Image (cartoon, rainbow, N blue to C red; front, side):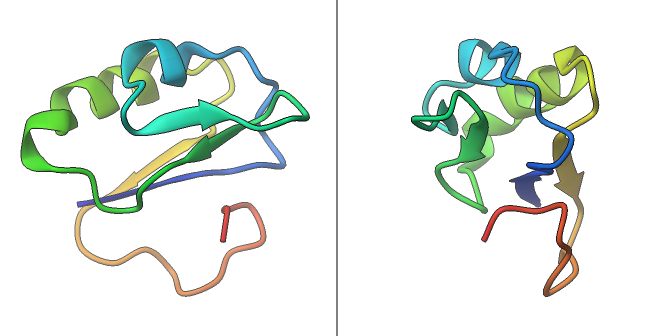
Length: 75
């Protein structure tokens, strides 16, 4: 599975970082970013929690491949 942040949706609530601090962080502007696109298997429960808790749905989780480029996603 893969995870990314839709930066145009992110409002910097920080729920993802609190749920999965090894996977998500906030940058200098206060917006979230994924530290890794492919978290380890043991991190997925907290990644799914982060996606569920995000108030704007900015945590993008996909089984298999994410689109190679989507302007809503981090690089």
